[in-house]
Image (cartoon, rainbow, N blue to C red; front, side, top):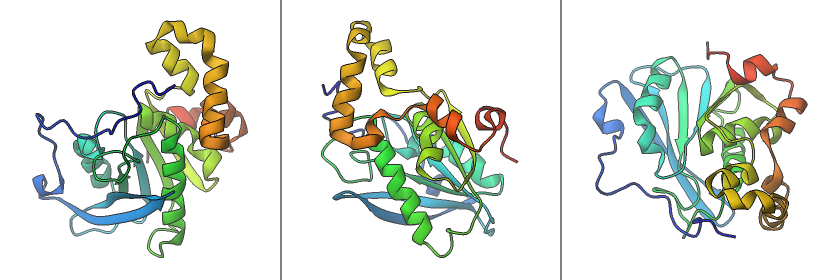
Length: 215
């Protein structure tokens, strides 16, 4: 069951996507790291002339690379964050023939956490995670992957893969258990994670997990 995942998630060539070069108050340091056999690429964004002492990992939605969110990323950086944003497997700046499936982003964010843990400038910074849509799903599950996260914001994140697929193709609701099984085979335990079970297990208070503003 590919559901259109056997393709890349690149920027639309007919649209204008902003980069750091479009903002006079933002800087960007290129980063790259491995997720499986693929190299993922992105940037650490910071306010020009500053070096904030906290880190926010931004996780993007489907359809394009992280540059589709540059105005959001800029605002987060200007609120005194180093913002790490990267493209998932098969998306824009990163390697991969296709995006593979929705749980692949969980493997990619695990690789991002490993990169942070090995980086002397980042590993000791307080870490928050914010994501939208596909990235909201990723951010919501991130405490299951990294127990050192301080706060999480999930914006319009779906709670699990079978539910979001059956919401797009209603006939798939009868096959939801088989979707989970297929993802378990393809992605291992990451293929069947869901946000409600993470909320029950995490030490982050539920009200903070969902609605508390970043301070």
